[in-house]
Amino acid sequence: MDPIIITPDVVAEAVRRAPNWKSPGLDGLHHYWLKGFVVCHAVLARQFQDALDQKSLPSLFTTGITHLVPKDRDTIDPSKYRPITCLPTIYKTLTSILSARITRHLNSNQVMSRAQNGCRGGGRGTKEPLLIDAVIGKVVKRNRRNLSAAWIDYKKALDSVPHTWLKRVLELYKVDCTVRDFLGQCMGQWSTILCHLGERMTSAENHIRIRRGIFQGDCLSPIWFCLSLNPLSTLLEGSGRGFQLRRGGTKVTHLFYMDDLKLFASSRSHLVELLNITCDFNNSIGMGLGSDKCAVLHVERGRVAKSEGIDLFMYINIRTLSGAETYRYLGMSQNIGVDEAGMKQSLCDVFYARLTKCLTVFCRALIRHTHIMVGSYLLSCIHLAYSGGLRPN
Image 1 (cartoon, rainbow, N blue to C red):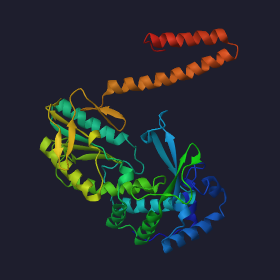
Image 2: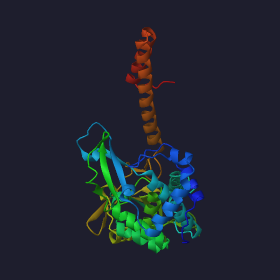
Image 3: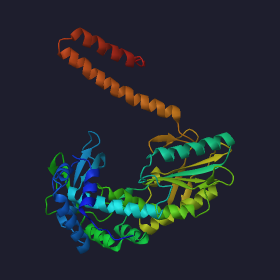
Image 4: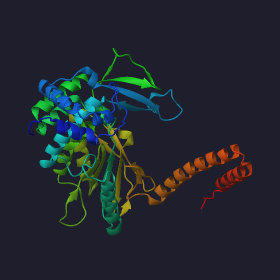
């Protein structure tokens, strides 16, 4: 990778891409002001270049604020909170510049596997892997083919990838040594402050050090994480296994969307080989599988076959789906293909539940504003419709 030279134009481009009012970190600065005060771009470019050359950054810019957002009313259980980390705007601007250059290096050398859809520029997100998966399901059903598939779930993937492997993967793919040393130095300073309901739970002196996982919150984090799993794609594609849609065609071994992995094979034995490759790789880099959330599916002549779970080493057992069970992958309930009827019903239930809340609020507002007869009539119609299992037109 070519060395990075940061100019005022590079800073201006990074600032232009950023949203104006995204929540800042400890610096309290929004990108809106960086866009307006163009005179700062030359100063930032010089300071960013100095930080890269000296391979250091003040600890203020490597400290985040992690807001604990409750998922439901059960606020006692720590697992019921969703942590959202806000990083300093200056740090996000610098990593945005580094991310753009690293991405250009990866794309020009075709480093990232085509199976990874998580960070592909110009991609369609989850649509591509879901379409490929749907085509495979239809081919298996229509042509009565055999298929063995596995859904793999990583245990807290973004928070568990070791820092040693994050550094090593930058070296493997020949990222500029200055950038590698700079990111390694910043990684040693990563820390965060917990914040609950607007109040900080940790003092400025007692930061929580981030010793494993990605420093989430900037645009470099997802690319770096996908890069850390890219060698697994190389191993799977080089295994010679997979599912072939047509004779002489390319074999599909797996689909990746960030850490969501699905494996495909033409038989149970071939699937076990792919699973062993995945487990070997994960053990080598120090990441674990959430075996209770993994599943396999075996199809014989277009029909789901009954079989026992797959036992792997390290006492990992992966359960087998029956014909009536489904697995939620990328937001869709699946078996051989997507459970379309079930998905439509669940979407309708969510939509009508939200519609009922909106209409109820509207009717109560009418009642409060003296339209008592109209509001009461509409409210009774809503309750009558849903108590009788009806759906409004």
